[in-house]
Length: 195
View: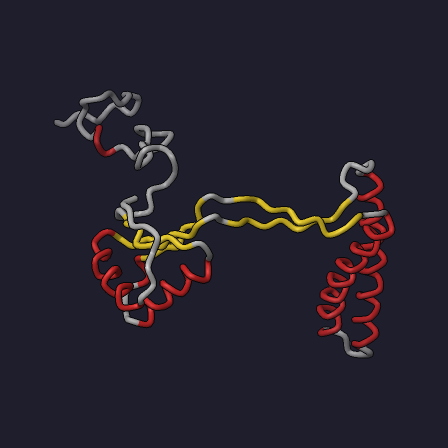
């Protein structure tokens, strides 16, 4: 006669089935791959060229694609990133209301079009009403939001990320093939290092 397993028995290292525990909070702790500084994206890669601007790096990958190179094994990596915030102008309550009205008008147009599809009568009037109501509410919310900021940010701006250099990387197994193709392109990269 076999004995039923004890359902209250706790797991201990070295017990049978101990290696079958899933990783994570309920099982053994999951060890992150790599050196702990971010995800490792698969096989090791090699930098086959570094370029001063994105169009040059893009031209290299496009050339490789045109010559039937498996470009799914390539990447364009921007390094020395800089955040550039371009100031577009002074922001007053009136201008905040105007910008809000523009945003609200787009949203109102979308809602008007949505309701206009299902309208049997004058669908154009429904769209115009949605646009006007959206613009009015957008202006009100824009003005109120700016007034509540207390003058902390009285300007509008646009932010963008720019890289100092763009490296083209390839899986290490395909690096020699990529370098040979680039040699025929007559575009000299500034460096080639393992990553």
